[in-house]
Image (cartoon, rainbow over all chains, first blue to last red):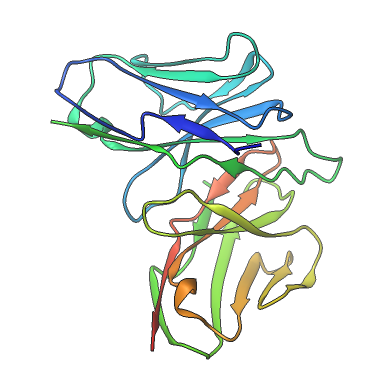
Length: 117
Length: 109
């Protein structure tokens, strides 16, 4: 298993353009998360899937952001009409649904760094 | 609101011991995680505490006091490769992870 894979690793775009990131989780993991991280901050939750169902979406996520996981395997995160404030590292993580105690260790991908000019 | 507090930055000497503290105020508690993140890389899992006490794992140990809303990560025999950010995260009552901003640890020779 190669772990969680994200691409592209880096994306530079002009304001107003659309971008799409892809995440391939660990194959036996049924949960997939998207986070955003800026320099000197912890990860900020965006959304998560259990299998193909999107179970939660952050209130901070504007309608320009959309995520899909059509077959319960890979996921895409699309940002439409990008703004300079969208510049950040977009992290994907996957996990197996935890035990009753709630332990749910996330395995992160290396991230996709977005720069909006 | 929910809040996780950690020092922004700490400096320590190679071979020494350092303790990184984390205090939290969350709606419910279902465990606390510590992750390590090297610059430009993904966070990697270090430890998970759900019961009070100390969990030891090699050079790293993590402590939890639920009544005080407090945890620390203890790193012994520091090595230069330990220079990284250390993120504290709490699983709240909705099993949502609440993250701290991280503590940047600088190791000097």
